[in-house]
Image (cartoon, rainbow, N blue to C red; front, side):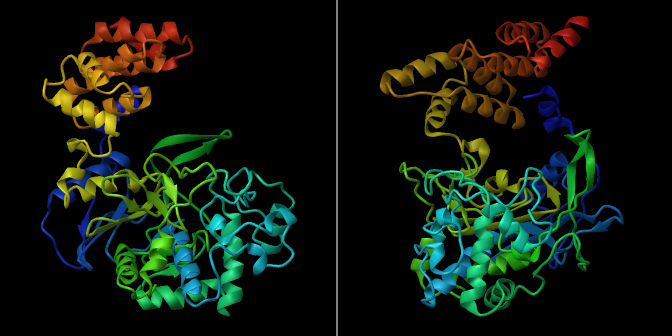
Length: 495
């Protein structure tokens, strides 16, 4: 990880001053401070937040600038694209048809669609919805929908491609299956799938500002889309300030992405879902929120956080405070905590804001043990180490590890999780604790160039330049191609 990234996590200067507005005025609180600081750190122009408890919205607030070009502040009426969170609406639509007795999620696609390639015919609706189908993806190498806006041509192109893997073998994010699901919803409901979702979800939940659309459409109060990356000479490079993003979703693709909404509307949708207005049977919701089990018995998802995928809904499968967490475009997220009376909606207009990575921290303001500083999110073994180190002021970390290994011979810490915890501690301004963890990583993984590189960065931040140079040089010995270490040695040695 680059030094620049670490430094900017502390020192990044805001590119704009966030405004805060809401239908109901709130005095600034600790959540507001956290949100505004996160927006500054990530250069997020605008953000909407909704918090739901006991079936009611207990916090609804907008922050920042919805339109940078004209300096228009965000309000609770600003409309954001939710991108792939649309898939969760598709999951609800399928379960509504299941409750009506019109389909079963275990049915094969061929029961409802004719002229499918032979390899596709036994694939189930469940495998399609959970991205375990093995279907070839309808997005091309440039992340564009095949067919130049033509559904017929897109299906022709993708149908000619081979299967990517045997159904159920693994999780692989895939848009093709959702296009097929759209055709099934249209066929069984007797209306286009967009209208079915509008009638059976938007209207029922009171989502008055929600609609289908994309960057082409003129949308009143649109918060638009911004990005920090730009294509230069065939390479995506990160800019210092947001630029305008643009994306279109063909009509046939809108079971996968294409809904625009507000945090308030999304909160009403969550409430309608949890109170039986959208799905009548609790078993339907349980089915919809249960992650797919792969052929090897495991679950698969995007990453260590959203580590499973159910029927249109990513899942946060973990012992403490599990959740279902639809995410969209790296810009929006909705977390419904399954064992807690808490749901949180965060919509932003910055691609790459990744609110799923900080939504648990917002939850911590309602459930304190979920704060990162309290160790939430660490692996079970890291939590054991943290408990041991707190008792000894984070000193002699290697001895603490040896003690834990004596108690449990299976006790093990990976290089990546230690490295990640070290940077997390830095972001919490716990410099001494971070140094202890980075040093421990070099002891446990003495042949890792990255471990020494990270330790060097932490030492440099602590002002221990000579020790930092030693660590960087060790990293270079292990990996002569480490450009960051070479550059830091050159700069520090010249001072």
